[in-house]
Image (cartoon, rainbow, N blue to C red):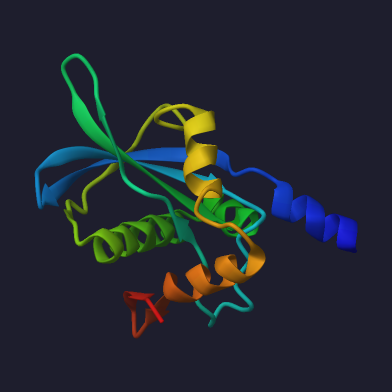
Length: 162
């Protein structure tokens, strides 16, 4: 049991899909959101409990003709696997991630998006450093999860920061 838990804590996040949308405020810019699965993120206790997630820091990138921002968001693998088969659930997870990004960084996002043909924007190494650098130990992880939990209440998405 302890080996299994240790393996989960040491496991790296894995990219699942990448979305492209736009940051409208404070400054208009292209935004890529990498949705990742990560065993470190606990599964919700039940369908009525909040869905835990972790949101990485925004990283601004400038290429020859493009300036854009990348944000990594990680969910428990079971949450993402359930959403693969259910378009409504997938859309809810995407909307939850976008709402949490808006609240955490005081951004206004365009809520129209498209799923890119690639699974990740940027390198896997950058994504791992961004997400794995957020948590330093399990107590810190639990505290950050409490601040970023999401729940659907009365049909509306809420990003709870406790």
